[in-house]
Image (cartoon, rainbow, N blue to C red):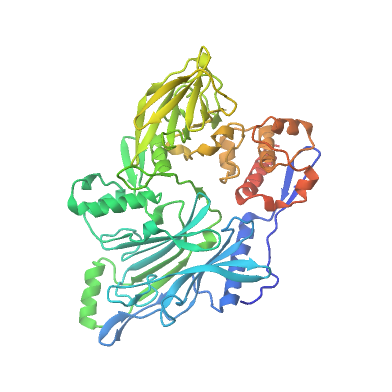
Length: 579
């Protein structure tokens, strides 16, 4: 590997005004800084590999005669299709993801393939930590370049590489189809996923056999991710299994109600808003419009045996990736069924049910499975997070194979019983004459069991989130953080990007925004010179003071993640506008 010199680093400097506890940030324009990162990544990879950049262009691939067989001409160019500089291993230092087209290490140098490589900076040298290549052998034993860069008889062809982040781990999906723009076309479909754990790529075993070819009712069921029309049909079982695999990966077909209509948005990898397209390769033809492409191409080939007008578009989407939002994916194992997405099912349910109510999701099932708790008595309130101090009624919901179902009858509490608590897989409430009750959930029912004595030191009040329905951009609260969520002004300021529009919608005062900004520092144990601010955070159960102000400031901004850096700037910008 070549040594890299004078690699430009974009440094954000945090300047703390100690007198009033306000945190002032001096930072380069975010878009300009990101553009600089992208330019650096491309030049670094080019110097390391000797490859030119060939992304973002159209290459001609006409039909040629070869050994009495008409074939599409191979793409001759080798080069870089796209590069993305990002902190993929969460160590506060950027890595470089490079997508290249070059001779294969896996399938032999005589074959070209698309390669996905991860580069890490070791002292002053960029080194490949791991890579995987996109290619396989077909039924005849011949190497196949799945990216459609090499020879293929498909005149319409698309290959896509996508990135997403689930529970903090990065995932890469490769999909191809014999017809552009669709995951499933009625002809064929292929999907494979890889995870990156910070040092190595690993293929996702659940995607090893995700390939499909069919039409008609099966395609419609797969598009809608709804196996209902295929239940009981022998030929439909394979499709049903595919649907369950696809849903288990966290992809869903979303239903959006408009008036009295209920439209289905067919969600595939390429349409999922939390999947970020890195590189897209499309092969097509420039035939005249208004004719059936398949028949027209066939007739021309048959009559002329040679045809110009085929091309390959290389779309580099890395420059459009400004932020990568984490996606929470909670799974459970149901008896007799495949793994299904619980969080996604609850999210869909909440879009049209209990709108205006408050809810929480806690691991309160018999086997610590996630349970949805809906509180029906606070619809007049509008706080994003609310932790009641009085007793209130709740309705419990579980998940059975992706279907949300109510558990038993609603639970009633009088005000004198106090709020609901959560501890060690149990919902708990105080008895009116001493003692306490636990709610023991099993399947579709529950029992309330009375306990005369016991410690309440570990009980935490149930923090509830406002359900704003489909229009509210529903985000599930994390069960493990439920205990302290109600004590934060902005509970997700360290785990999701909060735009200025989002902050305005919360209706916070300038003083509350100041505390919310300092809340980000307090999460990391910073202490404060201003007595009022220090007293405020001392009252929070989650706050653990560790560092004096000067000691903390000397540590620099590396202690913050990308969400926190972004949100501090957003909050400060809104504070300034409020005067």
